[in-house]
Image 1 (cartoon, rainbow, N blue to C red):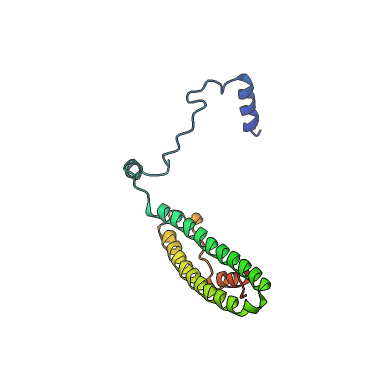
Image 2: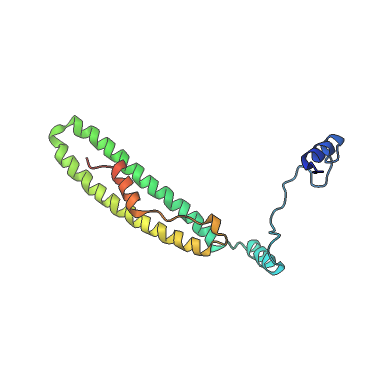
Length: 157
């Protein structure tokens, strides 16, 4: 005969067996990993108490920040293109000069984007090597696809 755990929990709740438990209303302390050895647990506690963060966590923060920088770079260049396109429509006789100017900006933008992308992929490789669990690893950003997306989002003027 199978045991219905959910039913037993509901019945206990109805009887009030979960009321006035110690620590009620307080957050659970999940600081310790039950699967760590006592030595590893002590080492983690000492590191945490002294303000040390594992390198892979610092790298995760840097990766998040650099991804945001890539998005911002693309957003800014896209906005610049839109503003210059409006000016070029207003002053058609200056379109060629505006276009040339934007192409220089765009080329610098692509160069910066590519450089930041390569740095980001290096950090992703580093964090993947340091990450304690494989299921939390990052996928590398495909450079060709990212640059192709860049071209689509911010085409020539």
